[in-house]
Image (cartoon, rainbow over all chains, first blue to last red; front, side, top):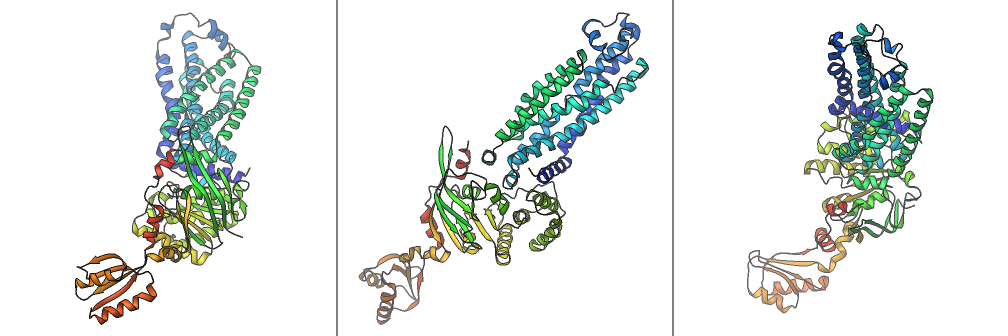
Amino acid sequence: MKWRRIWAMVKKDIREFVKSKYVLSVIILMPLFFAILFPITSVLPIAKLDPAEFGDESIGGFVETMFNKVIDNWETLHPQVQTLVLLSYAMFIAVLLLPIIIPAVTASETVVGEKERKTMEAILASPMSESEIVIGKIISSFLPSVIGTLVASIAYMIFIDILLYPHLGFILFPDLLSMVFVFIISPLVSIISVELMIMVSTRVTSVRDAYQIGSLVVLPLIGLIVFEMLGLLLNSVATLLGSIAVLIIIIIGLFKIATSIFDRERAIVKMV
Amino acid sequence: MLAVETSKLTKDYKTKEAFLRAVDTLDLAIEESEIYSLLGPNGAGKTTSVRILAGLLRPTDGNAKVLGLDIIKDAQEIRSNVGLLTETPALYERLTVRRNLEFIADLYDVPKEEVKPRIEEIIDLFEISEKIDEPAGALSKGMKQKVAIARAMFHDPKIIFLDEPTASLAPESAKIVREQIQKLAKTEHRTFFICTHNLFEAEILSSRVGIINRGSLVAEGTPAELRDLHKDQRITVFRFTKWDNALKNFFEDLDLELIEIDQNQKSISAIIPQVEKQTPTIIENLVKQKYSMVEVRHEYPTLEKIYLELVETESIPREEEEEIEE
């Protein structure tokens, strides 16, 4: 395994992303769109409502069980504030879809795009091994996703804090749960998304096909994020460690599959 | 040691619906520092052969050695030691020419301290100093191909495979690329393996030409040797100052195979079996009978004629070969 080759590919891919208006807009504009538009359309209208409209009845049941674990004195909060907190977390899940969505663009652009433009042949003709190519492509598709998610999460948290502070009297984000998601869960899910997209990309010949098939393949990951969030809200450290272990096992398994299906001969033949 | 040596090299593309033998028991032996052209129509198996020899595809049968290395066992080492110019330049168009070359330097493990001097060397050799910091996408087609050749040579490979180096170029760009190859062949002393369907290109660039059709080698030799393949088809043309119908009778009486009687050109073309012996006698008799001649010349079959005879016309179109793959 020669890391010089892998980093050369990553550097080259990132340079290409930076020069591509389309990819750049996905990496920069989409995160900002998620971070700003979702709070404006969902949280802001609730924050603007008259508290009297909410009555005195607290949001109880399942929601109370969840939020008691992350918000002190949940039951003492005004129902409007409870709604705002609930929505803030729900919209945060939407921001956490970015590590799933961005690789759909970056991985297909860097794998199928290279096939379409026939530049892949020069890589296949080089001494790079199949696993070096796959690792290089995973890293170069993963980095923009992580950076985009990080930027969006920070922007979202700041925006929510500005909106909610007058109601809450304390800063909601960052909390332990959001940090775990931004720095642990979302990068792991992003790697899975990248691997799935690379597997799809090695099998198709056009970027359009990669988007179409890829978006179907990564769809279950959205459920995974929601499941993880609920799991962590309801349970605790054991759930977190268990989740991380499962995600790592999936990553290793998918990597093995991705390298085994990335066959030089098939790649070159599919390219023509 | 031979630069390229193949023995009964065969490559099949199979699917549930179709089967194509792209390369069929191909035997090649190419010396080091030779410029060898594999000439053939589209779909003849040239690209597949090059891809096998460059370590990209595995053969279905037979074996081959490139620089003494086995194409199956040592494929990665072969890829390190050969340069490949693909049919399209396929540069990273958003990146500058320099970045394209630096990327290749990293892929081929060119020592870091050698990258800058090597780029300078390449700039001089290919005369691309003005273009080196321009995006590759902004270059003309000919210039892109030139840069692609530079890229194929960047890691100093001992053998360079050029797949249709001028196929997609306008005549003036093709000329630039051909001149560059000729220059490199003279100054760099490397083995060049050129795939082309361009006969003129094969003839002017190569020391030896192999004609491939339907995956098999149908003829091989220097361009002169190939022309000699049909020496027996040498035609002798007699052209006269004025036409006389008696000339026709004269030649018919000689019992020669008459190829053409052209009254407008005042010429008669014939195949003379014992050309060295019979031609002087024929001329002598024509002079005796007061036929005034402008010229007597021998016409040799052109390489083009020989090539067309060898490859026939029913070649499989390239697209068909490509669609058949898995």
